[in-house]
Image 1 (cartoon, helix red, strand yellow):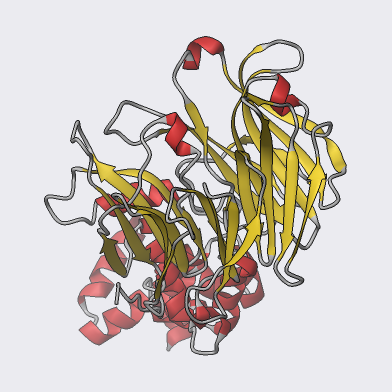
Image 2 (tube, helix red, strand yellow):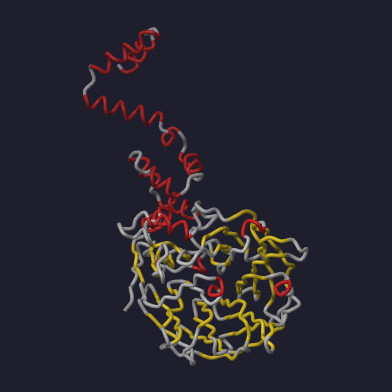
Length: 477
């Protein structure tokens, strides 16, 4: 019977086929119409028309969130695109974060399901965190002028962040907070004086005070005991650390004048030994060509230290804002020649002070981001002017600026962009807070913010965001 109907319909002239189909549909029952509709959809559906291996190769060009959204097309699409092979392959192509810098304990366990990873990615891209905790600690120290910038380094590593808090007539203190356990440790110098800089790693916290000591405390040890390492009376250029290695670059003072001597102090927390290396010749440009700011990056596995400076004049006497890089070994030897980036002409920055934030990971292995900002008027946050990517393995800048709004695996997740997206999810009345700086990893983002306007003194606060659905933050105890 079916063959006879096909032969009869084939004999219908082309101009009458549409009318014949309309009359045929009128005599069909609803169930038959539904079946016919599904048959037509399957005939035009590449998921049915093409071999399954070809279909899977096509979907390899889509990111994991697009694949996750296409599951809602129909049940068959949901069945194919929800399979473990498809989702795991898509997740593998999306490089979430460098495992060396991850802060989420759930990602290293079997409980971190595919659904959790999708939710994690969606939260990072939309900037909509699962949790948010403010830390309005009194005395939070936020510098608004260039001389104070060198004395402040809000830092963040894993689930811990550290900052300097001022106490009137009692000196400064370093506060270290763990977002997962809620543990809060407070450290002070022996002289209860001003603290110049602070750095944190997965194993320790270290800070330099004006009493002439480097203080080091290990997280595995209970309490707030610190080892003290004597350092010469000097101007501190940079402080950096990774794992158990600490590097401190100093310019010693002689009488009332500053010399062109540069001393690199290296401290190994495993052996509890420190040594000093004269690197004046290797970093000669720092004392000759108007260095405005200096930061450093310690790579303990490679036994090298990268130094980054902002200079207004280069060795050819060309004025402008230059970002200069040098790499030294732990023995103080120069590993590779200097490289520089030309950031701005003199008229673009004039007499306005510029600052250079500490290098921070982008989430991509062997890659970090350096943010260059302009210090604005009192009461306003520093203005981000440029963000450059650096290849930590090869010791060279990556061409082009860091994309401001492109959360893809090759670019990492820009923290400041996520911070602005997070403002869209804030309750009314939060618009007065402006971001000052922000650091993040795959799980948390911690932002330093101040009030907008001419408040004197401006109010400051820290905010922590969590983007992992399996991690719960704990506030101050």
